[in-house]
Length: 321
Image (cartoon, rainbow, N blue to C red; front, side, top):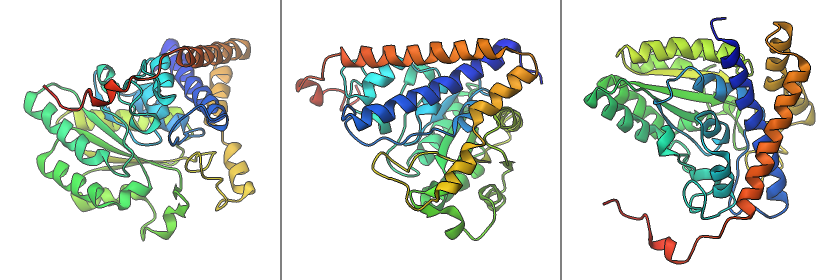
């Protein structure tokens, strides 16, 4: 493994932050402290953080409705993110966007999107800009398996292929589009196979709960795209532990199915790797978890003590100068 000790531990730290952040948001939702809908990515930490670890800091992403781990992996300020989700004026979007519309332009995050497949066209446009301006940056478009049956998915892949723009279309396949199994609405075995229809490479990550496997595959995809060869499609297999959203009890899945996937916990898998390869001791990793939980608690306090947006602010940030 070419990654340094510091890099590996940073990836683990981000996976802890993503897990602890969403577990805390789940508690806040139940207490009625979060306005709007939330979609948690507990169980998908490796699929998100492994991909982002292969990017340069100034590369660009478009996120989706289940994007908390993505924006954390891209380096967002946790205080601003929690304040945004709790609808406070100190949020990254001044409390106007909430969980499904978190953006962080300074760190290259063009924003999450409440529309399924809404990021496809935005990503192609952003990638076209990088090509025309010759910035050397690439774009990663995150979306779920359900979005691959939207028309925007096929239009975006076709146009990106024709224009040969630097974009990675990344499907995090957790098996369900809300309550519908992807296997019931797709007549091929894997999403990545659709790449062939548009003349672009497809990459498959069989174990999306293995952060190093995700990273290694993304390294190859990033190299291909950054060399100016055009777009690629990547699919990783993972699972969300909670229902589709905060209003979904997930009754379409059996307890046995969920429990089997929890045994494949991506954070535990990576923790064991770090211990077995003497990257860190169990005590050191437990300490990292404590620090992560403390950061999340501090972000909640920051949000609770932040002001509500003013009525006047509803008329601000509507038009660009």
